[in-house]
Structures are given as structure tokens and as C-alpha cells.
Length: 247
Image 1 (cartoon, rainbow, N blue to C red):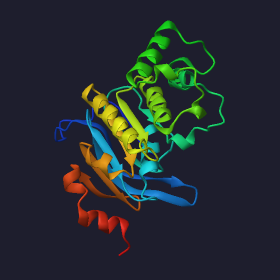
Image 2 (image 1 turned 90 degrees about the vertical axis):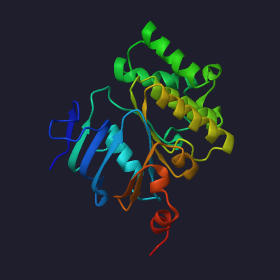
Image 3 (image 1 turned 45 degrees about the vertical axis):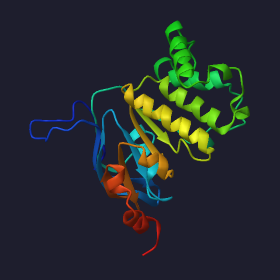
Image 4 (image 1 turned 135 degrees about the vertical axis):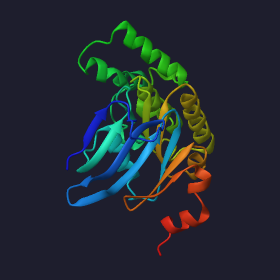
């Protein structure tokens, strides 16, 4: 069964009312010869921060890729509430240091979905880029090469690129991994501000401190859902021990 993408209000008269931004059921996805997600069903609450948590190989990045539309599920259903297509911020390591891009050019790539990569940006596009860079505190880095930036600066530039897409659904893959404690706190605070301003944020993370500051968690194990709900109910010592330690 092929996946269904439905961009309309999720609730129907038969549904229990729920403020979901994304809902998926029975998702299977993976790579040739290597299934990752197995019959995964859950929902992403609108106007909230959701953390995808689990050990390496649990399916966090694959699920994020399916939600972003860069990985095709092999079966199941994926439904979005009305809104713009999601904005996807990959891991910092996925953007090569050798690319001759300035910080501003990196953020401008966020407008390619609207303008295309080979068309000049409009005045409105440039204003969107300016606003995103100001919001993330990286306007002063505009002319710097991406590869010259610190880990925290580079991550903020990539998040600014996501903001430049003007989506109300922001997906981030390990936004705080490899950063020093101060940079992690700053990124977490910025994401919290975005949620307060009307953005639904989903982040895949190994950082349990960041996950505990989220509104909700999806705990994944071997491509399956091991728990969903508030962090204090999902990220218990017993649950984490079962997931991270062999039986």
C-alpha cells in the first residue's frame, strides 16, 4: 500500500477532536534491503515541541525524513493539517564544509522552494531572509563562509534557512548534537520561542535534556513506537533502560 499525503483538516465527524499538525498510521519505511520503520503510528501536536528520542538505528532520522517528504514510506498513511509544506533542517554534518557558501547564501536557499534555485530573489524574499537571520542572531555573519563558523553559529544559520521557508512546521535532525552546553541551551531557547510564536517544532535528538524540555516525546525502539506523551511520563528510568540496554 502506498502512502497517502492528505493536506486537509485532520478531524472528521467520526474522529475524537485533537489538535494534531501531523498524524500517521502503520508507517513502514527504510532503504533497499533495510527496513527501518515498522507499523509506526503516532501524532504530532500542533503549536508544540515534539522530541523524537531513541538510540542509533531506532528510526528517528528516517521518520523525520518521511515527515519532510525526502524519504518515501513504503506503506501506511501520513496526514497533515492545513498549512505550508514542512521546513527541514538536516544535521550540520549533512552540509559540507567545502561548499563555497556564505552564511547568507545558505539562508537564501530557504527561498528556493518559492523561487527556484536559478531565479533572482525578490525584495520580499530578501526581507524574509533578513528577518530570519536577525531572529537567529546571525545577521552579522552574512559574509562569513559556512565552513568558518563555529558549531553553534552554523546550526543557527541552518535554522534560519528553515525559518526562511516560512512554514509553520519545522523539522530538525539533531540540532544540538556536538555543541557545547551554552550553544545547546541557546538553540533550545530559540526553538521554544518559535513554538510560542506559532511554529510546530519536531526535533530528532540524543540530548535527553533537550527532550525533557519538549512538550511531548515519541520514544522509538527498532523502528517501533515505545512510548508517546509528556517527557516526564515517557522518559522514565525504566523505559530508557529497556531501550538503551540489551535485554
